[in-house]
Length: 409
Figure 1 (cartoon, rainbow, N blue to C red):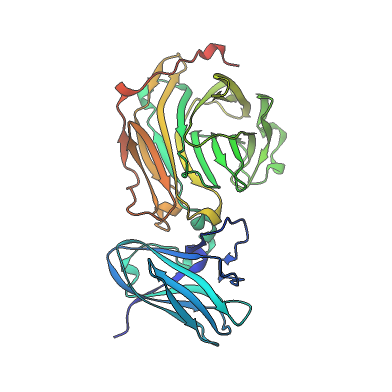
Figure 2 (tube, helix red, strand yellow; figure 1 turned 90 degrees about the horizontal axis):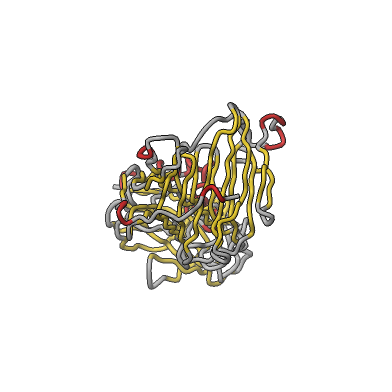
């Protein structure tokens, strides 16, 4: 009787893990290209529901000359000869524990221009019913998003405020090592925009505040003048412009070398200023000066709203870094009503994006630690936390911020 097996596409399930990567790492939707550097370490990830004995083979797009590679699950890795003319390279049989399986592969020596031209990993010993999470060939159009990793969110319950919410306050901490390039710790999100801190692909750190236009498009150049988000005022070091590709609107950012391990304080205000116009304003507490300062204020047309859909999120936005673990802590959330009442926000719902919902990746989580909320993602850790779980903190341990809102600006 033929063994059951699963084909794991390399285009959506593998990474180069030992060198800083930028766009064009040689991992394409069709597999690995330009595999000629013995220093590069490739890792292939998939998640199984129970312990299993797995027989592994690399399936190649085309044949190559003789080579030697090294492969394994855990240590020690094994040297594997690659015969000239082969399109299937057996990597051996291994015991694997339930959860994420990490298959390491690297080149040792070669006779031709490449070690091989792999496009998938054949995993014998499990069938589809035994797999908990991986990117399938049918997910090919989503490989970029799957490699970025799952985004997770804290959906805050502000209904306890009992009135329209005009202000929202949040504290954000990302510890050292939890902030690889491509990390976005979004502090204050809402219907129409978001505000938080980022690490870009060159290690550059930023604060970012964006507001979407009411005109639905991914191309900001097509937004009619009357539907454009306008800058009202901003910090002198803040840059403003447009953004696209995920809706379009007004974007503001500051190059700010925020430090991991330091807690940063964010404040945002949303208020209607006319029947069809709403002002979105952000503030940031600079630890260097000990002062709250205006970040940026936008005017959004065709909008009459207060805070709606308040949330935070953790995102990995660079696909080649989607294997690196991230974690962010959110603490001491407060809402302020339009009447000026401060209300502690003590509950959140853990939610996830499509990558998480479809189980294309399950390395995500969230919850409560030391009376504050946290989110984590990427890194291929097990087990994951359950989406749509409600979490609460003790409001008696929360400390109302000392902010004179009338003196801001």
